Amino acid sequence: MSTKKTTRLEQIFRKAERVNSQINVKLEEIKYWREFSTKTGIIFDEVKSGGNRKNRSKIEESVCKITDIENALKKDMNELIELKETAMRIIDRIDEPEYRFLLIQRYLYGKKWDDVAEVMGYSYGHLVHRMHPRAIEKLKALEAEN
Image 1 (cartoon, rainbow, N blue to C red):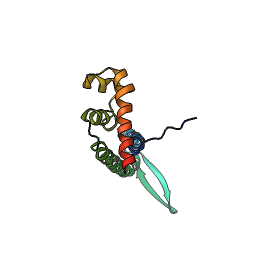
Image 2: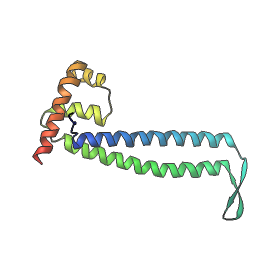
Image 3: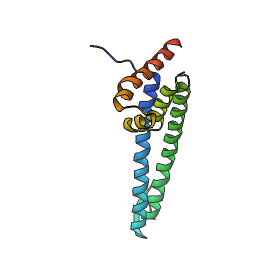
Image 4: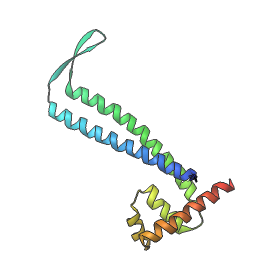
């Protein structure tokens, strides 16, 4: 049984995909809470807080929730930016411009293989089964040098 060794760049790409998914979830949550706050009007809830009773509107609750999500979103976005900057530094070390372009289009811009192939003027099969593995091998060779 062979185990496929991934490059540091591939690990960064996977982590970036996860962070990007988390960002998308948070954006959907913000959208939900904004829509929720516009539907609630000025309906008040009685909320117990530390033994005290306070009136807080649904809108205020929504704004607090949105603020919390936006703060978490900022952290995720900063992490994604750092990951992409690290990935770009690694990609820039590849001598072949076509391999760099392929990796940037696919992994940093998130384009589909068909779209990358079309932009580059190659068939899907050539790009995925020939060029991509060669680009990954170049990355592995660069990592082996370090």
